[in-house]
Image (cartoon, rainbow, N blue to C red; front, top):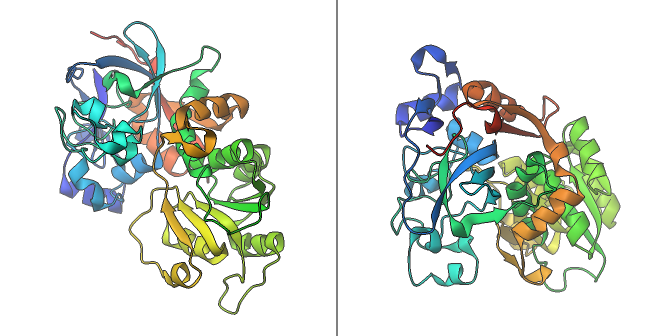
Length: 400
């Protein structure tokens, strides 16, 4: 079968940092990524199923892997060669349409008893990402035995599968996994006493797939949030943010002014605000976006890092002086502030209500991977949001 595979190659990762260039004469490579013909993955153990991907999204973490920008933190919790693709809607062998919850926790690894996090449904905090009967891998798409959605077939454990409602199109279902991440970020708790009840201004920095889904989730699931300020570079992002529930939209250079006006703060000499927003969600994860986020987070407020941050040099003085709570938001699970409902259940609801299929801008076949990746990397500049592989078009799509 055809699959896009990432090989462990230090020179190729180094070259990917310099220039991501498709070299058709060198085996169809794009940096460390190569289009290959490989056998379908074997079932690793009990409870595993074969899946045929229908659509598979290209995520920011995928792009960071392909172009060599991902943090070395991940090295012990991936296994090579791996097939990327964790934003997947797929068919099971009995014809059921599912999306996958990609974190590979204790259940998938055949580990008993479950670690405390997995037992509580918080697979994102699993302590056994390198154990059990499969190789290291924090998620499907980063483990050599499972394969991933950038292929014609892969395997997943039954604990990872969420049935797709019949009325939800594939084009929306492929957005459910990033929407679940957004729901988890949007439902982040505020520190006690930071604001009066019902008077919360939330700021969302970044208007790619994750940022736009966070805006939609705040609008739908946070009754205490009265104003949502979205930060977006491009006109189509600003339009979508407004349609998805943002109260106002600011360009990056106008963020501090927008928050000052909304919260009644004033600008201090060095550019930070005297007050700010109680809740700021950074969906970008760069040094500059985090610095902007720290500058507009209210004293005692919460700054949530939802976008995968790159290695960066950041001045954390405001974190200390203003007693800001800095929190990471990674994947999903039962949401205490939503009565224990799972992020994926809420994401299905959000995908339908917000018509998230409108965020899917373009699809490609596997043999056009170079075009797909280049499009995804420049999505904002090209007036796009989500780019995905459409595997429904591929020939020889079967479980054989």
